[in-house]
Image 1: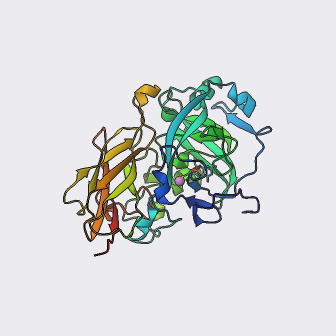
Image 2: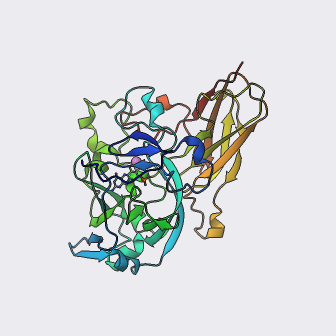
Image 3: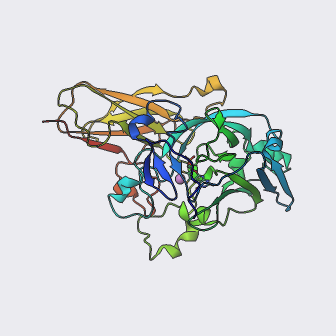
Length: 377
Ligand code: MTE
Ligand code: MO
């Protein structure tokens, strides 16, 4: 790819890969604000950032009967009512480094920062689908999205989501032009991106160019190969036998991680310390976050700092935003490990060990997150 026209980036973002650009904020910044600033929001690109003009940009929509409509952004804005939602995006590659430490996995390494929570403004995809007379109630259909970017893997970034999500009034899938009240930045998809709350962020297509109604999932590399969770026994020699039997990732699982302090931080024995972190599930409310100072032998409850009050905001009980929490340690034991795990309203919780969920692509690591703190003895 040609990386001569990349946007300027915030100096504190930690680069995991330069080209294509992949970066995350230092973990302690994540819990500073319930809404992640656009500058500090992680960036996951598969190719060079397209340079698009919002005034001339068009989105091409192809219906099931092959009608094609091309709409400008100004026209698109009239196809539905403007809405703003708060939603967390999390990459399926978040916390991949812990899987890499167990055995080699393919792909960019990520710490706990491939996640962020922002407000997104735009219109509902459902409204646009209704305008082009797509059957939003047909559960057999899929909606495919194509980005403008040319990816290192070959071709434009392309994925799909089922109509049961895309056309669902409670799916809250948006065609968004604003992030945190401002036009999307180039890294985050200017001038238009999809937001699919509760799904792996790989479905939230940036630099949106095409929307196609299909009778099956997208046949693209990104849908059929890159974001699949393979069983542990699948390796690179046997993988060809398994492509078809493994479903593409869709909904997020339950996740939590400690953001403050960073791993291997030195904290004096006996001193007080407050740990902070996030927790998120697939639209379900986080009911509890547990913290252990002895590798899971016993647990205590963390204090919830911020969580959306969806009733007040009128999205029924859909919790698309993360929950931030803290846990106060009166006297730092020595040596100390700190682990966390979250629970949601369906009593889902996280697996104990990353070893048991290791997979060759290094996806969906949601094991208990454990830090080793080495206080001065
Ligand atoms: N959309 C396009 N067009 N190209 C991409 O490379 N990356 C996807 C998704 N949408 C991607 C894309 C992945 S894997 C993730 S995790 C999110 O965008 C990241 O969104 P962000 O960079 O705004 O944080
Ligand atoms: Mo991702």
